[in-house]
Image (cartoon, rainbow over all chains, first blue to last red):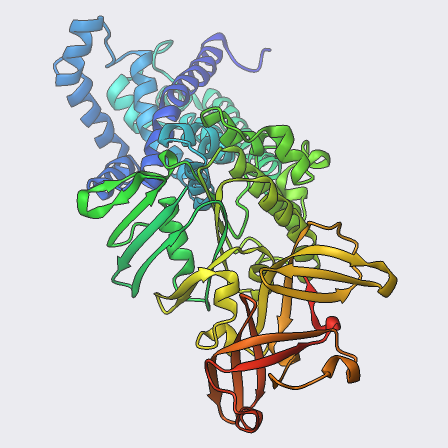
Length: 230
Length: 356
């Protein structure tokens, strides 16, 4: 394909990879949190809900900066990761994935939670009287029935990831080949003299990917709901 | 196998009763009487303010001692009014859900499938089942979890009359095949009359009375007898077929009844319903009634109680150990001099005895 230059292809590949890692790592945790919020009865529930939704309302640059404070080489979490596992997150591809994961976390939690809340709580009760414990019920009843919500969360989260900008550039910087995802590449192209053509090409790819993601989410949700719901 | 329940709750519940063991005990009463709450507490899905529930000598709940076994550890089966089958599983997977999680027990998969007629449904999804089929699967699923007690919360309430009569025979078969105690909540008298062995009458969160179905149905001071369709309910055995006269003789203790010829072989236990308005009373010394009336059943009886209400009287009788009810006018009571302790003849048309 001669549509994009090698560097531009690299940005596309990187973006897809970062999004895959963000969703891959974020979705299980998002599912667990969604389950706690939907079915749990514990004192800190409103606080947990607020914390989870924070990245949705904070300026992304603030989220990125807070991540830097926490996971930067000097930050409390960052120092431990470096000392114990030799892992550095700030200004790396993994860091870009982390920043993206935090940004899409509320969207994924919301989607999974809606999926769980749509399940008749009576089924959970029925499973209890049939001898199923809490985790057993989560695995055998709640998760399979929440599958439409979980899959929609994955696709929607993935599509949203492709557009993450503020938090990524603040926490992971704009390093071509490492952390320069599509939106960052578009931004750089626009900053460079005569870069409008490159920006337009990349923007077109962005639009195509986003559209494909949204359509996939819609389609998957419909198919799964039909397959699973009564 | 005994179940003892005692519970109180600030929402107006104060209930205590015991279930003697195997057999069906119906919790019967109008809606809002607290029937379903009692059942939910026994299953562990509703926690009243204070309760003590013992099953077979083990404590399921004792709030005074801080004991509350979660539902998943009670081994108490619950059949919900709305079936609550798992929509993402086939009928077979639904049936095996509790079975796989229960300790090995006496209730086998094939047996339940045969008993409830589920063989043709095993591969299907719940959404493709009719209401009656769903309820049968739900009953099978609960049984296969090897419960020590089976609770049924108005399992037929959501079904139309045709579906109900489709399920009732299955329930009757289950009853004779199982040895575990069943607590059955209902506000439909037909279901209770044909299924229950004993009855706990609830009203406004209180136990009004409890005892065998026969005793409860025939007590003139209880709401069952006040109903328009009040009737004596009793289990009688087929004694002999008098084929020449196309009659069958049924026996219950010292009571013997002739009814139109039945198909059931001698020895079969049948449940009879004798409506109160079909029982005529006669003076105990009336002579030769059998010669002048079409009647087959002239039963010597003792009057136990007379409950009069606006010109009508409900007379409770003991006929050879069987409890019968007769609804007559107050005028008749006065004319015949019917008083508690007195002797009368109860006249029951053979055509008036319904076999349930």
